[in-house]
Image 1 (cartoon, rainbow, N blue to C red):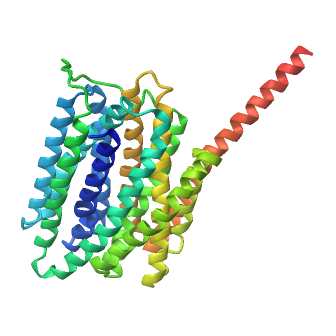
Image 2 (image 1 turned 180 degrees about the vertical axis):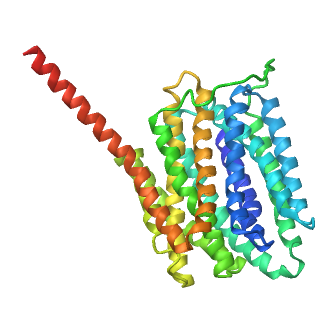
Image 3 (image 1 turned 60 degrees about the horizontal axis):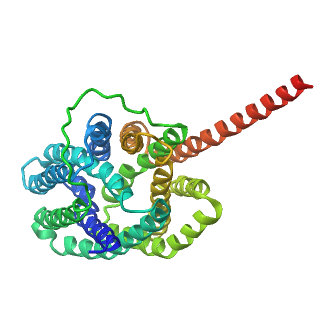
Length: 397
C-alpha cells in the first residue's frame, strides 16, 4: 500500500470513529440527565488525563510497533467499555471513567504517530498532508453527521441503544485505522523503565501562548452543548446540521486558507482563526433563531478547521529546532490538552455564577486578551532590543 494511501485511509477511518462515536457523545450525556457541571466535566476530564499521560508516561515510551499497538488495544477496550456502559442504570460516572482511560492511551498513539510519520514524510509535505486529512475529515463528518443525526432521531424509541450501535461502529473504525499506522512503526525492541520525569522541558513562549489560546477555545464547548440541548431542546438532526454546515463551508475555504498560509505565514492565519472564534461567540445567549445559530456554528467550524491545520503545521515546523523531538511532541500536546482541560473546567464554574449570555461575553473577552498578550510581549521585546541597540551605539560613539 502506498504511504499516502495508508495515511489518508487512516484519516478516513479515524474520522468515521469521530463522527459515529464522539459527535453526539456529549449530546447523549446531556440527554441522560447530566448537570451543567457534569457536562463541563465531560469536556475537562479527557484532556486532563491526556495531559497527565503526556507529562509522565508518553515521553518515556520508545517509538515502536509494540508500544503503538499496546496503547491501541487499551484504547479499544476503553471505547468498548464506554459504549456498553451507556446501558447501565447510572452510566455517567462509568462513561467519564473509561473516557479518562481512553484519553491516556490516545495520547500515546497521538504523540507517537507524528514521530512515526516524520520517519517517512518530508517536513515540507506536512501542511499538504494535514490539509488533505482535514478535507477528508470534513467530508466524512459532514455526510456522517447528517446520516447519524437522522438515524438517532428515527430510532429514538430504543434510546439509548441507538447511541450504543453508533458508538460500536466507531470502535471498529478506530481499530482498523490504528493497524494501518502501526505497520509504519519500527519493529525494534527496547528495554525501558518508567521513572519520574520533568515535563515542560521543551516548551517555549510560543507553545505556552498557544496553550493559553486553547483555554479560551475550550471554554465555549460545554456551553454550546448546554445551550443547544438543555435550553433550546434541539434534536439530533438539528445539531447535525451545525456539523454539516461547518463541513461544507470548511471544504470550500480550506484550500484558500492553505494559500493564505503560504502567502502570509502560519502565525498570521493562526491569529485570524483565533480572533474569528472569539468574536463569533459574542451574540450567543442572546439569540434563539435556529438559522442564526446555524450561521454562527458554520463560521466557528471554519475557524476551528483552520486553527487545527495551522497548529499541527506549527508543531511540525518547530520540532526540528528541538534536540529531544519526542519530548517536544509530548510537551506540545501536554500544553494544548492542559489548556482544553482548564478551559472546560472554568466554563463549568462560570455557569454557576453567571447567566449563559454572560459566560459567552466573558469567554470572548478572555480569548482576545489571551491572544493580545503574546503580541504585546513581542512588541516589548522588540522595543527592548531597539533600546539596547541604541545604547550600544551611543557607548561606541
